[in-house]
Length: 407
Image (tube, rainbow, N blue to C red; front, side, top):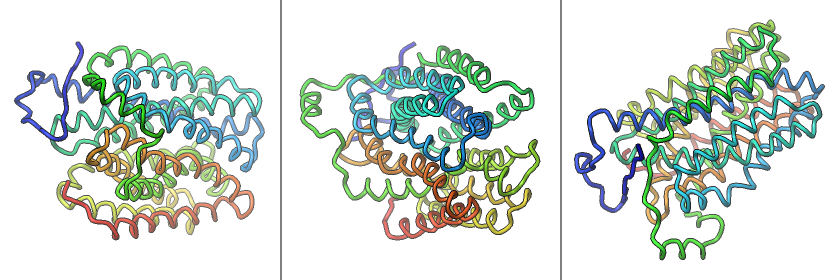
């Protein structure tokens, strides 16, 4: 069944006025959107859980891995000017389907890499399709939040984080079974394709833009005009996603090389981070409603810095795991809050506002991990994590300087 909703940010009708407001159906729409977030998160987590194995198989040093990982932001940067326009022209419903299918296919090809350039090429397309999927799925999230007329964006990102935790556990199982990454990736790919097939029809289908709007859109520059609000939101998101990206790509390496954890516990740091990030996102909407978005963001920045320095100052299994848990809790509400605020920007289509904010914030997620490889080569991985810890304080400082309306 197709879902067609004309969402106007100027005239917001009561929920009961929608013909689609049948008992249980809107919750099914919310579940479908959540499962697409889950699919995207599991795709990335599946790759991230096998980075240490692939690094060892290809004989990559920290600097080599940093160079290879730069292929992801290159792909992301290539698509950033186009993703929002594709969503506006073809609808987020169509672009999220195509994007996620290709994103999963790119993940599977990562397991086929036998040379460094093979891996870099696959990661480049991995970045291209992840950007399209990211803008599309978050646009679906914003549309769904508009229907429910209450903060639910954190719960969608919670599904993404839950997928990360699931991917970590499955990755641990696959490593213990000595299953090669290609077979691991292929199994996950099949499961995700089934999930997409079962839930695609419940995504929100928006009405196509009017011809005059299409003509106006063609005359615009590739990226929407960055007003001050979007710039601030992008920088706050950047600071958070630097920390998040480091956890995804380097937490396993940190536990292996710095903490010197047993092989069976190498994935503990990543798992600890993902558990708390998922938990924080499922309760994040309630926290924002009770304490306000500004206070929640400030506390989040403090948690990120505190967690990083706990792992740096006490590089042992238990303290480091606790530190990574604090980082996970800290980053949990930042990006959902930033995206939700961006989608409400007056005079800009939600997909275009998301593209603008993502153009800044997602760079932290993508460029941070490769840069850490170069820094670690010079001053060590532990010192690299200490440097990243400063970004949490950056969030506190930035949030303190801006005014936010109640959620």
